[in-house]
Image (cartoon, rainbow, N blue to C red; front, top):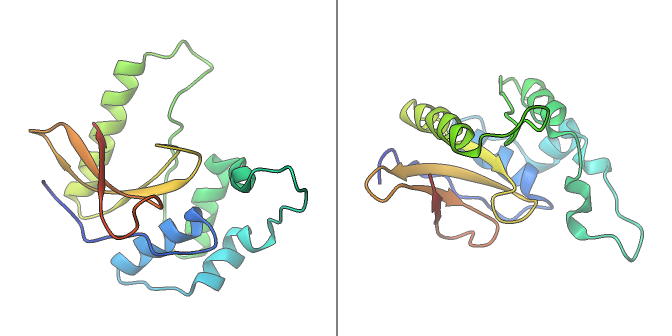
Length: 151
């Protein structure tokens, strides 16, 4: 596994704040969870209806929320939509572009937060294997270990 970074999600009230906290911890800028929740606005997202899915708070405009949260925490970040539905998606081309961006970030020693790889939750890509054609991912599904997903 190349560029495997020691970044593991820790339990938190939601996977977005957990992913941000894990990345900041790794980069030597540890912040308390309450600060991340407050600066992201996540502390104020409340589900009150008995029929609402617990992941309902994740249905938000991440393209704005993620970079703004990271700026408030003193970091610059970019959010890439997984598919541009305004043009006819070329999934193979898009997958290649995103994989190249992720591999470049890992090579620079930066973990990559990703959304919606299994379900609408956040995870962190921590490494990759060209030989196996896999990314290493720390997810809420398996907090103590890494999973793999296809590159």
